Image (cartoon, rainbow, N blue to C red):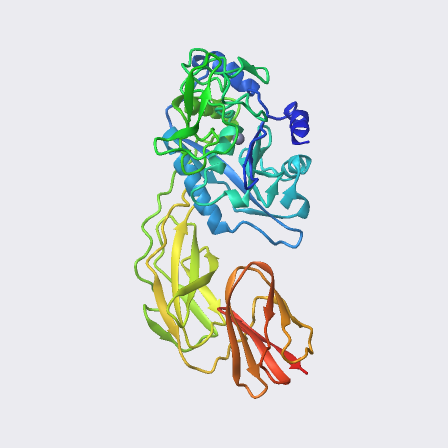
Length: 490
Ligand SMILES: [Zn+2]
């Protein structure tokens, strides 16, 4: 089914795929060379290339559900963006964020098939940038690239050490897989390979037909591995392969356009770099602008401005976090962590600030807090966090509005028979560290359960074993507030 789809689309678009199937993460990209690349490879010298740094704008589309849920978090985009730029640094190509992240609410695009992806890109693309869509499920893949439209990426394949983005942008800028031709086949590695696969000559292990075979690059050695594989210590594939002349070889796992797993693959070959640069300065010259000045980020601050390190805060209803502005920063990621009674830092709230300060409302009293900031700008997602700062909120009666950020907090059945479990449900806009607490009607603390609650719908079973019938208060408490609900045990 997938192959049929690909064959249909390959007539219109050059598609590169990185599959997200957990077990195999296999590939289904069409076994063909992009027509521009085919012309380039016949005579690379005819395609002009400059030695300058090429600045390439990206538009980041963060796709969530109809209800605006499930977005890939912005600070994680910065991590992935950092890795993307590291991957292309040897090519002297610098990607930058063109404009703010664009949020799209659409179930249809969040989990899409290829026709949905084409529609998504056609309806939302921004001109003169590489449009990158981060979704929940890009047609069953880790990612794919449509040469004439853009790149779709699976948010689960964009960890800070993943190279999926670099791989898909490689496709977008004309590169085929190093195993080009073998897509969708099941080679028998005990036999010499045939001389042709999918209409493409098979590359010999000695490279003698490299210009016409495989990916058409002579500095990417023969590779027939069309499934995700882990490289060995020497960077080569555990799987031995046999070329059409019966010569044994192993694949090079360092190449981004291979299917070696992310911890091996980290480079483009020189010939691939030349092709990508020629592509940018040729058919993609609309992406390049002469008016770019990079903005190097200064070092993040080591001390806060407000509150002072270790300060005891008495007014928990409103607090301003402030830090020394970092030169060239266009925004900051701010992490606020709650220190648990055991001293461990618990998962945090993440905030974004455009200036070097942030207002926090409704903190809980009697807690210890840790926070840190990380600057970024359109060129640089790699800046580290600042030192970790801390403060305490004192034992004061809070005049906080106690506005909790969760919703749909409910318990059922309610009333419930004493001793029987109840089901607690709520929705969260972020992953939170929560405390679930049960108080008797006289305010006595009866039960306590710390929870590492996740984004979206949460459902927890709460035991009432051993509790007498009566009225209780169930509370959810977290860094942003608390909320109570009445429970009756009969
Ligand atoms: Zn691919």
